[in-house]
Length: 288
Image 1: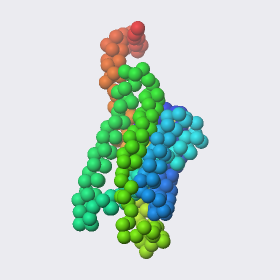
Image 2 (image 1 turned 60 degrees about the vertical axis):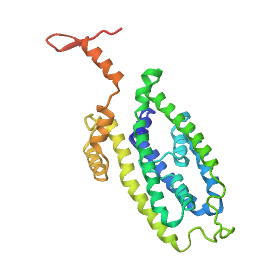
Image 3 (image 1 turned 120 degrees about the vertical axis):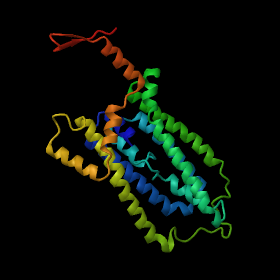
Image 4 (image 1 turned 45 degrees about the vertical axis):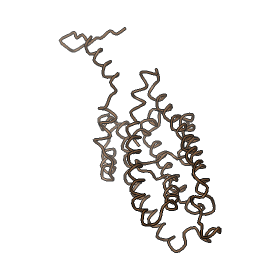
């Protein structure tokens, strides 16, 4: 979440533009998930999952190659990069619907518990991987922006492995053995309940994830409300975002107080050679 906002800041976008792109990401994920629920019954789950993996690969390539606002907005809307820490993309409902066909009903609770645990651990590993660009940039001679673009290419490469896994799924999974005919309606009597739950989950994602991304843009633009461009309106917006769940202290710490080891060593070398004059009112440092 903050990783994506930081990248958009490096691309030179304003907090408003960052908010628009993040909002497009959320809306696109919601539309795609609802669309999958409406048409998934017409196709085999393996086909839909393979298509989602291909879209994931194109998303990674697009995020790495495109930096102009409008093309990037389109990639954000139709792509698979999630707008929040939780997985709200099209993969989750397709995988869960496929899991129900792999085990008898009494064993499904345990199966979904294992599935959720593995998904949570994978998400935690992905969050830790957000530090890779800062660690790899000095070794590879890349800028922060270039290192993040390399991460997007790694995301696209991961999609190839995901596609291979999905293609190895047995065609027999997801097929109703009792009937070869597809159901007449995708949801049936539960349609209204599913739509209400989807709306609730969308509001929850909007309140937390989007507020955090918008707060990151404000913090970067105002240097944690310290620059002269901080106005009473800025403080009111910050207060509203904080009330919506944006973790201000965590955002500030990650952006301004967390530095890679190589950068800290450079700071130490510079400060070690610092010379002062005019009773400390002037300082000089020479580094070759």
